[in-house]
Image (cartoon, rainbow, N blue to C red; front, side, top):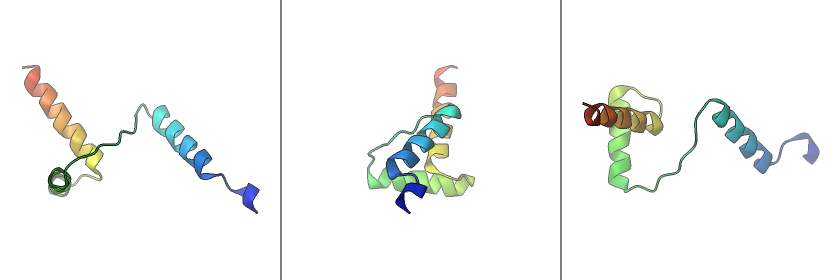
Length: 68
């Protein structure tokens, strides 16, 4: 039955609520393929789960440099 399952919109809203409750925000980036390949290389090299973790590490490293 169709009413037994949440709609896609409901599923997405629930996902966004879980992300917000965790203190995070989802962001969509448009990047050149070469940049994405570089992020993937860093992800593998450092054993990270996703590109977001790579970006977070790079941002934190940049913060450290600018705050010195």
